[in-house]
Image (cartoon, rainbow, N blue to C red; front, side, top):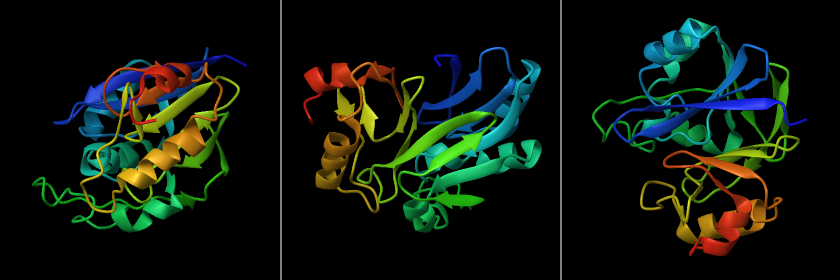
Length: 209
């Protein structure tokens, strides 16, 4: 298809990338990882004519969820997460929000299994479970448009940290190698922090692979 557009708003103390995806010419969006300032995020999108139809979490760390409650309440959007992340999402100690000074838990409307397709706002993506950064980290792959929302699993020339609850470096590296590096090289990768990259670039330059 190649008709999807992606926008980015950087939010919160960890400078988290909050992405929104929409079809060219349409105003219904899927928001990924509302990191903070949910009301600001909602108003910013609304000012530009966008309507939030769904919210998807790549994982449950505090710096990816602090804006979720406000955004959900204002938009009425359905929240999706990987079923393996339920425990962390719903525990303020595991998701580090308590330790970061703003205890927060979130509950998805739908906990999705690995490999399942999700359709929202007329767009379809596939959830790819990529445990390692957390036990339930995942990515969202829009196959027709070669777009991967990678959260904190894969960064430009790096991978996510694994020293927080439920993290495992060996599991993370295996996830990246077996789940992500098998995707086409021209897939554009949009990580939770920093700049975008491609699968092909990471195959060549990422020292963790």
